[in-house]
Structures are given as structure tokens and as C-alpha cells.
Image (cartoon, rainbow, N blue to C red; front, side, top):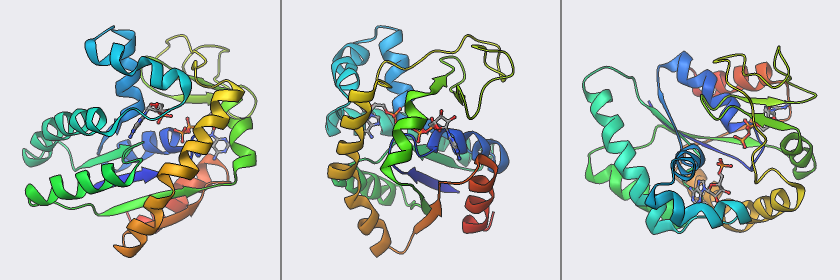
Length: 220
Ligand code: ADP
Ligand code: AMP
């Protein structure tokens, strides 16, 4: 299965990706996580993209698309060999040019997306979710200081690493990221609706309820 998770920052993409990854035996590909790992490791790519993430702006399409294809081509080898049953893109595509590049690249390889899952939610909820978000830099798990606290404060339940607050989870940057979503990413919804592969899920429910709604929508 080849899936895309789309939705505004804070909709719960990373949280739901962790469930789907396990349940459907997919590889989770988060462009945000890949950029942050490159910044942490001070790679050339990390140095190039750091300022965009800090300001809550999108990384240029050319860089992002190249990076995604490097990763997807690796992951496709695992799918062809039967090691994995597919992949799940989280945070990509985010522009129409990225969506075109994905579609064309897949078609060249004789592949296509099975579904695009939209986590639909009002803006008002996002700021609360992101201001309180704590993430694990080791395994990517997401928590919320009030709504989804870890069992031990500041420590990841999954891997035991210390949790961090992302630098771009400050209110002004969050608002900028939400604006970017409305301006540049929202047009993807009608793009995928026209293709008949958009599945809309109400993301303003408990984590478990959203997860069940996604399973129902995917019939998987
Ligand atoms: P995204 O990857 O879309 O930016 P995350 O999965 O990191 O979003 O979730 C953002 C924040 O919202 C985190 O603090 C997470 O714990 C919390 N969260 C995720 N899903 C829900 C939910 N269904 N209800 C309440 N809080 C949630
Ligand atoms: P995320 O972890 O998905 O919230 O993404 C964090 C940041 O990484 C975004 O605010 C962008 O700066 C950058 N980013 C992630 N995915 C993309 C993408 N598909 N296109 C451009 N920039 C991206």
C-alpha cells in the first residue's frame, strides 16, 4: 500500500503514522523528520534547510523532491523484496509541484498512490496541540504535556530517550506554518479529490477514534 497523510501542522499525522506503520507494515517517511535529522547531524542538506524550518517556511521544492526520491527508491527495494508492504508519506507532498513530481515519478516506475488520507481539523485546535507538543528526537514519537503525557515526565515511553520541544513549536512560528498550509498545501485537497483518492477523516477526536476512522476509510 502506498499512502500519503495530509493535514495542517498538529493535525496528528506523526501520531497516526506510528499506528499505521505498525498495523499495515509500512515504512513511515516523514520529510520533517529527515530534515531535522540532517540539521542535527550538520550535513550539507541540513545546513541548506535549517533557516526554512526555523522560520516555518517550506524548503524549496527542488531540494525536497530530490530528497524524497532518494528515500522512496531505497524503500521501494524493501517493498519489491517483500520485506515491507508499502510506505506512508507524512508531510509530503505540500505543494502542487511536489504532488506532480510524485505522480510523475511513480508513473515512470509503473506505480501509483492507493490513497491520500486527510486529517481534517479546525485551526483553533492546532495551536493548543503544537504549543504542548513534546517529541522524541530518537524515534519520532509525539506527546502532549496535558493531553497525551508520557508515563515518566520528559521521557519517551517507546524508546526511553529524553523528549524535546521543537524549535518551530513557538506560537508565532506555528501561526506561520498554519498560513503556509492554507496557502500552499490546501490546493492539494481538490487535486487528490479529482483523482478520486482523497479520504477525509475527522481529526478532532481521540487518538484511538482517529486511528479507527482511518482504518475504516482505508478498509485495512
Ligand atoms: P503532526 O505530525 O500532524 O504535526 P502530531 O502527530 O505531532 O501532528 O500531533 C501534534 C500534537 O497533537 C502532539 O502533541 C500530539 O500528542 C497531539 N495529538 C495528536 N493527535 C491527537 C488527538 N487525536 N487528540 C488530541 N491531541 C492529539
Ligand atoms: P513537519 O515535521 O512535517 O511539521 O515539517 C517541519 C518543517 O520541515 C516544515 O515547516 C518545513 O520547513 C519543512 N518541510 C517538511 N516537509 C516539507 C515539504 N514537503 N516541503 C517543504 N518543506 C517541508
